[in-house]
Image (cartoon, rainbow, N blue to C red):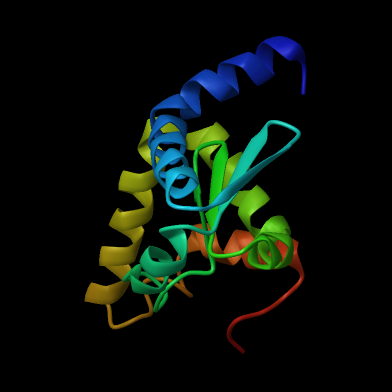
Length: 137
């Protein structure tokens, strides 16, 4: 990715990155940790251990992406989920501030059709395909 395109992608995802940084800062002040990998900042531990299991999409989460931030329960969870979450980082770079509304719109549309809002969501299908795992047969 060219430098100009990278700057545009980072700025396009910035609203959600700022939320991720805020949540990450709360994790840090409650005993969590942080690491940077390329253009992604990963936070783990602290309050994330208590909050992420209660995320209603997918029955709780080990990790979750917000723009260029990935928040995880533990460093091991971040390591295990990294390929999947990096796909979501790329999706934020494409969709920017529209990513979360689009994600939830797909989730709702799928649920109304009697399907699984998480596993059948095209954003998750792409992430699991790149990760090399299949959640459903």
